[in-house]
Image 1: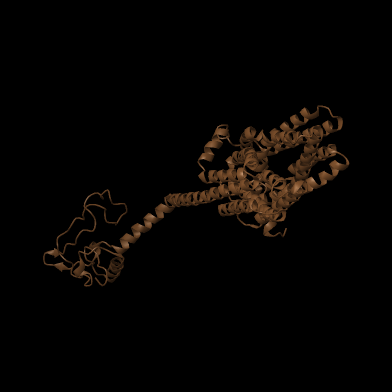
Image 2 (image 1 turned 180 degrees about the vertical axis):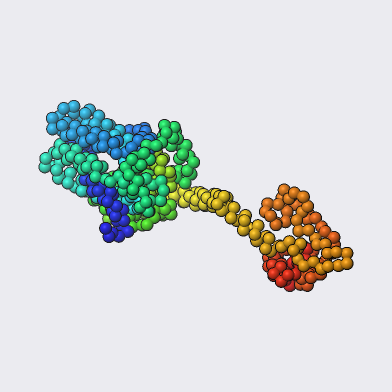
Length: 547
């Protein structure tokens, strides 16, 4: 299938099936979100009650996401996902029943919202880990970017169609549509070919693992022991990954102070911009378009590295400062557009690095930590920004948040550069100290030493009346000193055993006056030439030419 770099992940059949089913599910999910908000607001007339449903859906992820991550790393993903989709469908059908009959009222809506949040918290890490196996390692970043594009497009379509349906029929039909949308996800789970999945444990660029079969892939998902699959093991592993920790910390700061745009847009529309509800709707539409553009930009990049993360963080932070100074609605919307695009790039990059820079056996727990970070940042940032907007003003809040996130992004970028340089040095040291590298180097050094410093015992010995002229020894007498590592090399400490002070008959005339000079590269080369010419080098080596 011929596709450009923007849609590279769609070359994989499994991902094409999953992307289509995911889009259907996202549309139904946003229809349900709109239906729940409208139903609660119509029954109570209170925005606080509507916010309570959002809180109940987000609260379980603070506790249950870590358990979902541990399950994702210990159990096969497909059975868990099938059960989760069935529970989601049943809960959506329950909402439709409440909306039609009125049985249970608001307490039933709140209970179903809490149960939906609990199932989503456990399902999220399992889904993320399983989806990462649908493409190879090289296409994972592009797949995450296309996932962001699917979510953004599904949100726009779901909210638009849902607004029409709820006005004509009511929210019950929205809940029924969402319940039916999970059938597409279950069908996609069965349509995925197990032999074409990628575990990510090795470089999956080659197709050599395609014949591994279903049993091998499922065993690789469930081979972790209870000790290795525990929550504490996941935390200990993250503490040993400083690069990932810095990325998560930056994601938390940007998410808490720079990502709660629903709060800041509402405060600006109602306050300095005086745009009202229509202006807020216009800004929300612009923001949604920006998320789509950001997903396309992220999908076009071959690699989503930490430089992209820092650059997008600086862009979003600077945009916040400029947005706080925007005089009107149009200028504010013009700044919101790149901020929304940068937000999607940040999310996609953090998700990609969290999976690519960690072990596959720990991927579920890493994704759980990412989900908890997002939930905490939303829970902390929204009330904080709302309080600041109420007491200091919306403009001052945006400018202050932009300055703080800019400082945090610069600090994170400096830390990431140092950590990556340190990790590169450590990996290089491990490679050079490996036996497969160290032993050939030692053999080469020993061979080179024998060539450039041959034993003088093999040189021509002139005959005399008293017998052959003795030659100075080239090796120490007895065992090799402790400072000597390779055969033929001079020991670090100690002296060579000196023979009788008799000069050979055929000695190199160029180096004879310089016996006491230290060896250098030039003298070593000259010594090799002397050896090839059959001349005996001076005992103390050759002098540098020109000395």
